Length: 385
Image (cartoon, rainbow, N blue to C red):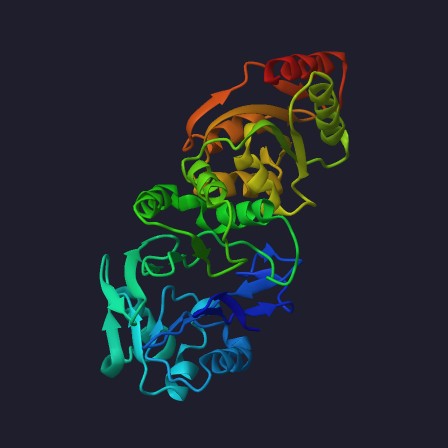
């Protein structure tokens, strides 16, 4: 597949509809795109390759776009195999092409491929430039967005930022779907821990005249860039994107589920602007994590289990803490038939999180709802709204 981005910049990526789990854990019902680009000029540059399962298709796309030209450069922005898996095949087909990457990327090439292409490598760092003719490329380092070797590429002629994994999303490019939801799930699943590094990248981007963003996954972004940049600013500064309540729960025999459904009903009745719910034992965990970061308030409801908490809730809280969850209001609902300790365990697990305010109202179920716990739910709904 070849798509013209400008007269001399082409998209030559591939779509993967065979994949079930991206990075071995993220459900991708609409597949995944591995994006690659070609800049056609006096010297031709290829930006990133594709997953090794699609090497032939990618090389065919590249050959069609080159139109008998020989590439002068392969620019390697990121060494994850979904982008770097075809480097060796490219190097064998185009032995005269130089390979451009950061020093850390070349070290990783040795690890992945057994060679760092020493005779043909061009090492670049922050602010280094590469002239193709009309297109002057400037390299922007982006360490830990989300690997340490990442370098982005800015084309001042086309006013294009080739952004590596930043501004990417789940889903193949031949699938129509809302950008925000799958980009949010992608961001918090994969990049979310590195908010400070993303903030530094956004500061660099603010100094560039960007008309187009070409990410390593998902669609090329050409309109309303303020929307995408604004969301990245919200996400990476750990601010709530939406006022509302996310309820994450587990339930063994249905009593905790009954309680959270009552809470959701009362929140909606009181005019809460958004209420989202996730059954952590059944729903997509990455979707639940996304919703927790999206909303301003979070309710955690679970059962005491082996003097601890039900395992999916422990997993969920681990996902939050390792991604730097902060700046939110949290409410706790616990259930237990003889020695409820879930609220204490959850609060202890959240201790690493910064700027967490706890609701004054706590809800305790002793096996099942009763008049007292119903009253607590009503009071919690009042407090959260």
